[in-house]
Image (tube, rainbow, N blue to C red):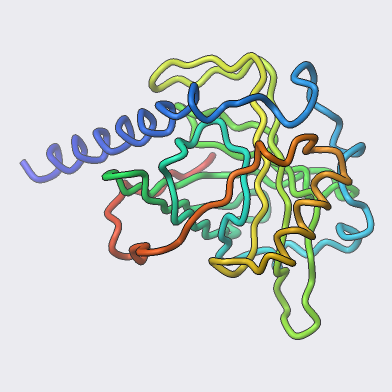
Length: 233
């Protein structure tokens, strides 16, 4: 009885997590940061200077959301933490833990590395089969002279005609802007600089559409019970 019960529990968490994320779409989507018609080419929005010599090893580790435009995440969600880990030369995992009201989330996101050496940040990410892989691109990173790891980054996702399978939902145009730092709470100066960078590279037109996340009273990831990690093949 243990194995079927565990399988049922994991399936229930997956469906619940998908439902919680999608419950926020109508309320959270106040309009895309771009023109709402087309997805830009990666080469037109990437910050070439910061991404020159990009080292994927330095990108690994824990990231926190400083500011986001995320249509699939309800405004009640907070405490977002991403653990980005290389799983093979071609793939990576990106574990998201968050708290959405009474619902703690622990999602095992999977990704595929860029196959273009000239554009190493042009990656794919999702939770197949329910959430198909879509472009989720690293556009900008900040190094730190005292640290081997990058200390801030800007990511962007865009996909036309995006279908989510569980529960069924359709985005005519899905767009997401993610501004990450290594600190739970970024300084105002850091946040201002990164938001301005997102404006400068052309992925944000209206900064009021970005949402700041709070981290007060957050549980440690080990305290959040989730479902088994998905392996991308």
